[in-house]
Image (cartoon, rainbow, N blue to C red; front, side, top):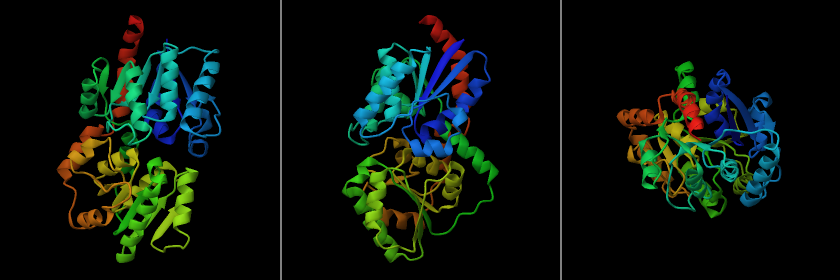
Amino acid sequence: MINLCFVFGTRPEYLKIVEVIKKLKNNKKFKIKILSSNQQKNIIKKYVDKNFIDIDLKLKNFDNDAIFVSKLIKKLNLIFQNFSADFLFVQGDTNTAYGASLFGFFKNIPVIHLEAGLRTYDLYNPFPEEFIRQNISKIAKIHFAQNKSSKINLKNEGIFKNVFVVGNPGVDHLVRYVKENKKQKIIKNSILVTMHRRESINSNLEKFIHNLKVFLKNNSEFHVNWPLHTNPNILMKIKKSFKKNMNQIRFSEPLEYSQFQKLMLSSQIVITDSGGVQEEAAFLGKPLLIARDKTERIDIINLKVGTLINADGAKLHQKINYYVKNKIDPINTKRWRNNQGFGNSSTKIYDILNNFLPKFKNKQ
């Protein structure tokens, strides 16, 4: 029996581990424990079935990164007095993933890292995610990389052992949704916007909104759907910037995931600073404008299935005009889909865990 503990705290983490967990729970070789840090409290409460979670750590007061990570480690230390784990499984580059990985390192519990090897090599962009993922790679014993580029990054850092290219399990949901909604039409001149990065809380977000407003004022045929993030600092900035309503912009509460997929599928253009939305929009072949100065999903840029418009949206007008006149090359979209696993990543991860973990455990 292998005791495998998953620790998550945000919706993106949940979406990328849920299908793997479902498969493992039907395998008698594994005893699964699922811990939630409550990092995205409101979203987790609203969209994740409480029966999915075995232990809710109920962390509160997300004051800052240091306090959250220290609280998480302290809580894990208490929880693990009552049970043990052979492996800790974390996803991505969140504070939850980092705190759980540090705990695993201190307790000598091997860490499995999903989405390993993404890099900008700028510790402050994105902050703190770039620092977090580089350090999780130093801790982890098993690395699930999305693609060959991530594997090469790990190799260049001296990480050769137990690196598996598995694609992106987050895309598995999208593939299934698209198959079930093939007839959904694209709404002409519709733009989907998502913004949540903390780098945007400073003047970048205000400048981005200004550039968006200018574009819409000069292009009255376009309209924007903007599902809001739960970050109160982001919400305050947006509220301050939109004291007067703009008929061309429709704001909404955070959407249930299938609702968001529907909105993305019907949009003509996607503007985002989210890593996951970058992956999905490129997979759908949408004109993708990345509202960042740098992206760790560098293959999106290299394959020309997306473009950077800077965090302040300085290139927003120019790039929208470009994509109105030019289509994404479907050959490049197909290459990106291959890069992301074509919807079978969860199965790949499950098969590796099923076949590899017993051997790894026996060598310990």
